[in-house]
Image 1 (cartoon, rainbow, N blue to C red):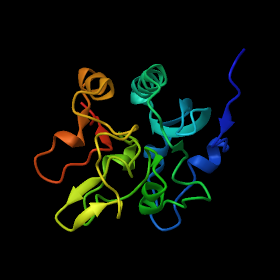
Image 2 (spheres, one colour; image 1 turned 90 degrees about the horizontal axis):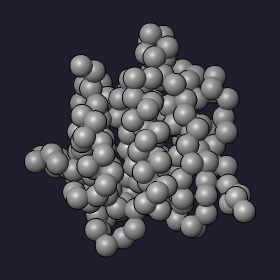
Image 3 (cartoon, rainbow, N blue to C red; image 1 turned 90 degrees about the vertical axis):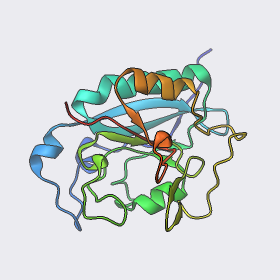
Image 4 (cartoon, rainbow, N blue to C red; image 1 turned 60 degrees about the vertical axis):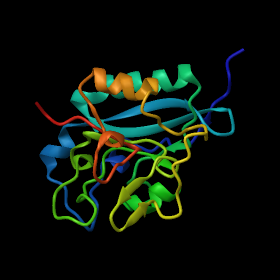
Length: 188
């Protein structure tokens, strides 16, 4: 018997790729994005369906990552696009809700440098469990990197190994400002 899935996101593509009214994204970036329907096991141990917008060149890698997470029964809280009414392009709000996401036309925190999320070339997974540590503190606030908690990404996890094999970088390897939820692959 097939497990019934809970739908966390089923937005129309136009809504997922709509413009952020506060930061206009160039159309050529939007044209390179694809929206993926993904399935995952959440923390309720049930099958869920969500959506993630990524750069088209990385779609196969991201689908493979979600297949691996399913095989491993690695829990993912939710996968809801940042443009949804729930988040309205607010990265902090998405992270506080432990939401996994990719495309968000924005700057790297506390800089004027464009984030790789701006082109759909970065994915954040369970950010509340896998926080980013900056000089100014931990993000999201009040999060904790506890390697004994299910859904936490570890140095030797199959997910890290999978992404690295495909040429992705894991923020958990960064010597300064480690970002345990962050994976990115820049254009070659």
